[in-house]
Amino acid sequence: MKKLLFILTLALIIGIFYFSWLPDSTLTSERYLPIWLLNWSNEYVNLRTAVPFVVIGVVLEARSGLQKPVNNKSWIYNTLLAATIVISAEVGQYFTDKRHTDVYDILFGIVGTLSGIAFYHVILQLVKKCKKC
Image (cartoon, rainbow, N blue to C red; front, side, top):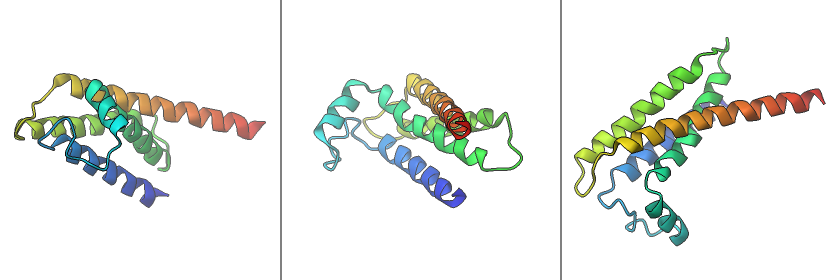
């Protein structure tokens, strides 16, 4: 399970950098993406940054949950790691033609991560309650 979560984390990070550093921010060069997704992502530009970071928040927190002993402050480490990823992606956009850095993307990435971490813990608590039933 640890290896699977590591591979998933790595794939998410690579995907974030790939889409962040494309020269065309409308993603129209990505023919394999459905039209509805392209339209949605171009209408909600900052929100599209938050979505993959929700997943990153869940995956990072799940990886932390597998480690012993459980660290109650793992969410701080995971948020800082995700913030480093989103800041790196934004800095990379500075050097990419037709792209620009956006402070709101950084904010949305961090909020997305925190949402993913919270979602993970809500699901974890629900699973624990269901086991007691």
